[in-house]
Image 1 (tube, rainbow, N blue to C red):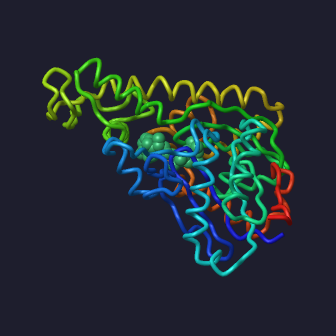
Image 2 (image 1 turned 180 degrees about the vertical axis):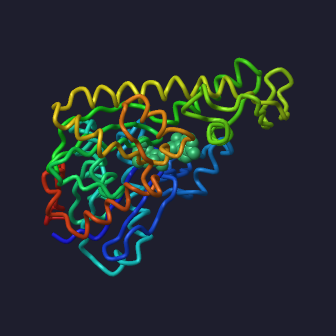
Length: 342
Ligand SMILES: Nc1ncnc2c1ncn2[C@@H]1O[C@H](COP(=O)(O)OP(=O)(O)OP(=O)(O)O)[C@@H](O)[C@H]1O
Ligand SMILES: [Mg+2]
């Protein structure tokens, strides 16, 4: 089977690679629907901007929640939208798609994801472990006998995978990602300052003030944001202090460090020893958080580095997999062919 399109479907973003063209699309996996209608009003960047701005009867949805499929209807609609946008798929009646999937997704969620791709128009659909795609995109030689550790820090999940000989020797994950920091920031501004802010403002605060090494982070930065005052019920400018944001980051970052440490501990001694030389590589957009590599390096006692363009490691890996899927057959998680009766 020829695989024409690879989809790195994340909790917040979806990235698409096409055969021979490489990565072609990187946008939010959001879609806005009018109540009772099957087709989205808009999708991607425009739909994401609607969050917190929708009028009655319009709502914005993402297919995944915390790294795994939450709603197969939205997944099918998103795949359909992506297939419609693709120039090469317009010319083909039969096309195959490979979709990245978290290894901790339950079988029913994997089946639903495959069904969604078939319903959306793919002749064949296959799932591949998302950590394999990220590792390939990060340039890790996971077929080598030496251990390779990939830490993927996303919006809805965080995973650590130790590879050797193209297989997984140890694996661990957190069923939440850096979006949890946004939720904490929203709660802090509401409880401590008395202002309600949207998710986009919380993410902006996280990107600006967030730091994975709170002890070393500058504490005197004050950010001015606009929020809805809970006393006056009017939009007002208020000050966001650094320390509560650092505390919110620390809650999540310390859990990431603990989880990665458990993965290294669970690995056979020889492989753990390899990591002293080869270190760990961080992928996923969350790897861009200030000092994340140093913090994890300190916690694990091994060198850690952020991959080039960490956000797009997954889709660049998908591009490699659709070009040459054979070596990764063992990492593929299922397959469905459209019935001849359809
Ligand atoms: N510089 C940064 N500092 C902190 N967080 C960041 C930074 N850049 C991106 N992020 C966060 O990274 C997350 C998005 O990561 P990514 O696009 O890899 O997730 P995803 O692929 O959609 O989700 P997942 O793979 O977890 O299902 C968001 O929470 C975003 O706020
Ligand atoms: Mg991802």
